[in-house]
Length: 255
Image (cartoon, rainbow, N blue to C red; front, side):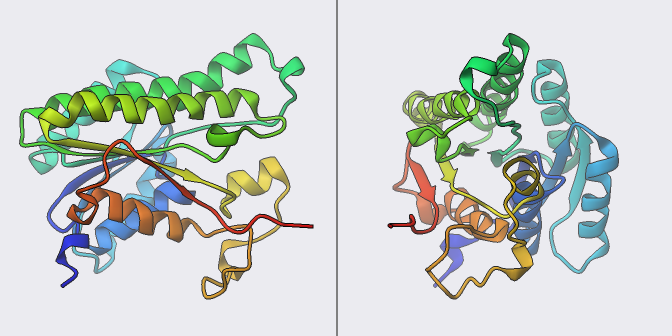
């Protein structure tokens, strides 16, 4: 039996889903019969993703919504529009994020605040507002996307790592507070994943299409592999995982 891994019939908001990991998650969920909200800061970026899902043979439907997760009112409008369209909200994937590389001595105050605002405050806004609807409608599942940089730190990524460390702690804390509302809160901490953001910011050359999932001997993953884990955490199969952060990464290079 594999029904416990299904999100069929559920409604999911996936922030930052115009590309990369978020796009893979909405496509995976729609493949399995979930209705999905495709959202990012630019409608021109999310509308094509939603249109492609709706024009395909996937059983799930998609709704495109423009939303800046740092704008609390915009988040409230997004959740309300989701409930109006699909009748409820079962799953929230907090994937929206941003980063840039800089040594800590060279990060401006505005640069620091911007990264923390998007990665940490955005997760807080979306989670708190989604929880209000989930609590009144039988519960739900929240999956936050952090990073290995939030677990152990990373050179030239102190601002991003600090924000993601906050996401990890928020996950365990919110899970304890919201368990009585039948809301599961968990977190994924990916290592290197072949997305356009990673290629442009970190100079990684690997293309997702050229990565072989059949070998364990690699240090970079595919967005679809993170989507696999997101579906597990959003499904009943993860019922005994609460407040946890699951690291998904390849082998370290040992010299």
